[in-house]
Length: 264
Image (cartoon, rainbow, N blue to C red; front, side, top):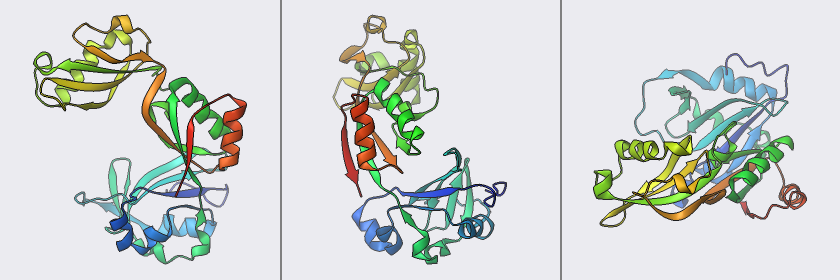
């Protein structure tokens, strides 16, 4: 953050809790008390930038992400992100690790502004992309569902396929298997195997996102479990900095029917 001037713009640094495991929370009082919050106090932001983020570290083992960090400017543009391991005093950013002064936990509690967290179970790629844009236009932001809320993401369809292990030439999933499937499906434009597993004796299963919606182009070596379409399965989107009422209003105005749930 050394090149970010907190004096000239309104910034918010968000801390979004990653691990909801009850045992982890019992052992760390700070994590237990502060689930999702942001800091906008200029003095504290400068303190974090100048005093808490230390030199680059070679320590990469046992890193455990407690919080995801997102820094937004006055125009709601993301200008920094990272992951924070409080117990080990490490910050991960841009594929590097930095020592971090965990004394941040002693800062005045009134500087931690609670953030509402809402889960949306996205059921349509098209509607999901539109909803992300509407949320961002309302100064909210989203995490998760990276195939939807990544700017310029080319994916428009989702299918679930299975293929015989003999055809794949492997008994378990590895990088070569993933590359083979993506190569077999290149007729669908850009594709992404998001989930894959081999849980039967003869078959492996793949959740695939694609640029084109052309089921007829899927090779006959694959059995289609879910037809290629705009509909998606198991794609939760986490929304922050917007109220449940605001979100419901946005969805109702745009005729979007998705399950939304208040989170801790």
